[in-house]
Amino acid sequence: MRRVSRRAFTVAALSALVTAGDARALPRRAAGGEMRGMWLATEFRRDWPSRAVLPAAVQRAELCAYLDTAVRRRLNTVFFQVRPSADALWPSPYEPWSQFLTGTQGKDPGWDPLGTAVQEAHARGLELHAWFNPYRVATHTDLTRLAAGHPARRHPDWVVAYGGKLYYNPGMPQVRMFVEDAILDAVRRYPVDGVHFDDYFYPYPVAGGVFDDDEAYAAYGGGFASRAAWRRHNTDLLVRETATRVHALRPTARFGVSPFGVWRNAENDPRGSHTRAGVQAYDDLYADTRAWVRSGWLDYICPQIYWNIGFPAADYATLVPWWAEVTRGTRVQLYVGEALYKAGDLAQPDAWQDPEELSRHLGLAARYPQVRGHVFFAAKEVRADPAGAMARVVADHYGQPARPPR
Image 1 (tube, one colour):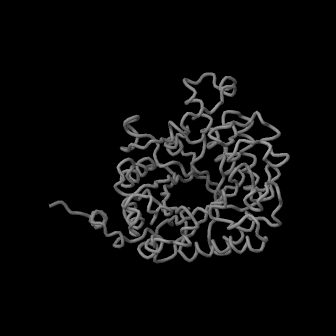
Image 2 (cartoon, rainbow, N blue to C red):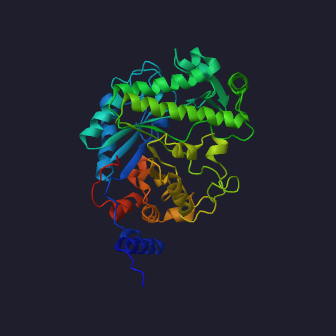
Image 3 (cartoon, helix red, strand yellow):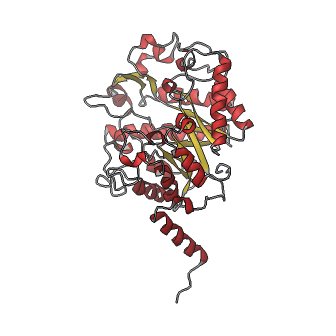
């Protein structure tokens, strides 16, 4: 009889436990660290600050309270949105102060939120990753509503109106360089532990909308087989150049992206996942996220796998092993973006009414050694936890503190 190693037996046993649905029986991975993160969103004051007009001391206290929440939930990393819409949560020489701090874009809030967040996070043993949205300018189309001196007002030719919003044009090299310079200013000023992009590159499709980049395509699109290929090249350049510049400026900082959870459906590309998603990052956002991993441009990737186990169009249990295979053999760490905000939401599928759903996610992901942790959207739900899903995750999986992966 062939001898079965202890390790092989253990893996088989753990797989059986997951199949049986007993996520709590799984030990947590300790070697090499584990990502336990939360996103802290500031666009529209989604998580913080609670109101537009607050004294600086109150804003600071609210921010620190969220850091305390992360510690209490045994998390180790906060992804803090510091450039939500071509603005800044630090005294940037490139872009105006964010309107989400005071209600008025360009108005000095009287303190430095990013500098404070880095200092206070480190004091609590947390990592702080600065989260940037590269191209969104405004959630309206009126340039005159932007702060006087806003770069988009000085360079209206950089801007495209689409779907009721304003975006910088990713196809213009001067735009890409400006965006990178604005981001690198924060990296130069503060000892951030990471630089983080979310899923917004080219905007999500809007029915009947046309993203008018004709002039840029005529000027810079020569030599590409299609406009789509040119757009993907533009996004590739942003990602590759930002990674290179971040590492050159601050070698200890990591660079990562949290893309839409589906790269491509297998019916469109045999390398894709067996999903039927209506949006595909490669085709609709012009983000070739798989290539970024395979090329080693990222330190980590954190796909937003915001669907429940068994969801027909995009099953969590299908996408986790697909991403694990993409990262296998690379230096790119895989974290899974988790939709904590869906837990208990009656508008979501029935699976999300069960507070055990997210805990089962972590149990399933533990079967794949490429998965180095999870990041939860978002901070408000980590704190309030109306459905008890976060408490269940902590009880089942976060019995002891863990350091982040390095």
